[in-house]
Amino acid sequence: MERLIESNKLKNQREMMKIMKQHSFASCFKSMALVFGIGLALASCANEDIAQNQKGKDSDANLTTFSTGDPITRTSMESNGTFYWESGDKIWVKDDNGAWQQSSNAPTEKTASFKFKVPGKFTKGNTYKVYYPGKNGNKDQVSIAANQSQAEPNTTAHFGLSGDCGMADAAWSNTKNGFAFSLAHKAAYLLFLPRTSNTVLQGCYLTKVEVNSDNDITSTYTLDPTTGELTGTGTGKQIIVSTVGSGAYANGFPLTNNATSAATNGAYVVVKPGTHILKIRYWVKDIATGIEGTITKTLPSATYDQNKYYNITANLDVRVYDGDHYYMWDAQEQYWKGHEWSLGGSQPTLSQGLTGATTSNDYAKSNADSRYYNESFTYGADNKATHTSCKDLPNVNEMTWYVAKGEPRWDADELWTTMGRLYKGGMWFKKKANISGYNPNTAVDGNDWRTDIVSGNSGSISYTLPSAADAGNYFYLPALGAYVSGQLHNVGNVGRYWLSSAPARYRNNAYLLYFGSGILFVGATDRTTGLWAEALFE
Image (cartoon, rainbow, N blue to C red; front, side, top):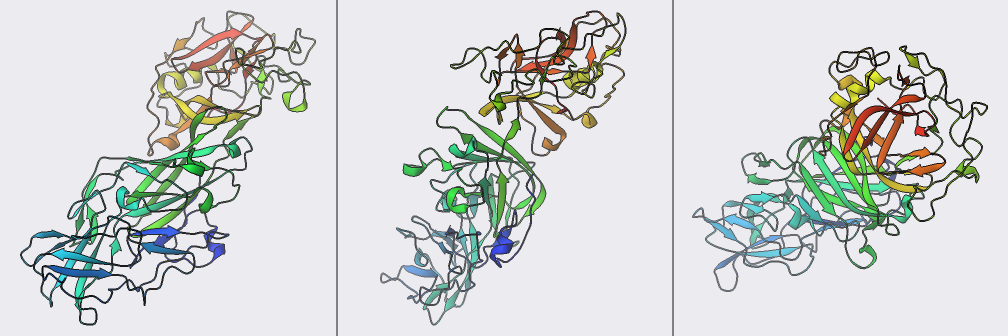
């Protein structure tokens, strides 16, 4: 999990290497375009966002000028960025009669300054509240979009459509001969900065960023002139920003960087300010294979203030499973010891049925081989594992609690790698500390399966992923398949994990956890099978 570090000012390059930093938008224009140099030296915008020289009335005497941004005196962000109005942006103002008036004109291109023309009656000595509700808003109503889109890295041109918004007080300026205002932003802004050193992922692309919150971050809100904040309670807890554009970005943003680089793949999201627990799913696609899936990160509760943006870095080095933890039950050595794929050995690395899949005869055939299963057995007794491979794994009683009460949730998209290839598919289980009644000495049915004659049990599967608030209560098991008679089967589709218990009735069997997208149970299988044996259970 990436940690958060907040700072109200942008200071130097060394501070910019912190995982997450907030930056003020106070006295800035509506949207921004950031050009990052080495080290992501960010800077806050200047406080000189004031009106241009303008006439108070348009030539037809029916329009009043509300101006912002003086191209002569304005100071942009310190050498590395400037804030802009975008094409189509409009403002709203209530006139002397209390009637809402929308500017009759709008910029036709990105600009650092603009003279808005507003119909209605306005008095020189009065102060007026200016509202910018974004391109999808109306008057004082703001719509923070659940679906946002950014066509290229490190740009905020999409902010107006995504829910960027603001308010300002406009007062008459004799020197400007018009009403001048400086917009204060009322949304919060997240800048996602992924990186990876995983060679499998460095040929992949970021296709979208999915932001899940424990409370509302997207809905329709009100620009409240009294509080100076967005008010209202929405129900939307998820925002997805697409990062697929055109040309060089037709597949998404590249993941070629092993150090943070906004210019390579920086992605911005507009959210409602507030205190949120965020679960971030980075969607990554391997263009060569067509595999697209997620890498999940959970951020602790933090406050995201209005008029600020936050750097959120993420190391997308997915979970790596080495291929060296397949064992016959309670064997002293792993299934392919001496024949490992990583050392150029004959270990198959592709599931049967796939192009290039192989079969090897180099697995243990008898108890003369240290890779052979533990043959010890006593009828009606607790036949527990004694070797390092399996003795510390959950016993069969414990596993019944995971299956029946651990709220298992199938995840078809979470990415991981094994034996040099990218896969997805696995199951989330509640950690035992969060399972009510969890008891290693008694199964969920009240019996002790270590000594009872039982055949197993099945569980129900949910396809709803853990929420942002609940994500920390779960752990993940990938569908790593199994080796049968020297062949690899069902990687990415089925998970088969040894337990530390063997049945009290069947000499050559041992207990396992078995799951897939539509199946989940605790049962028994032949001890010669090569299943995953590792302390991944929490």
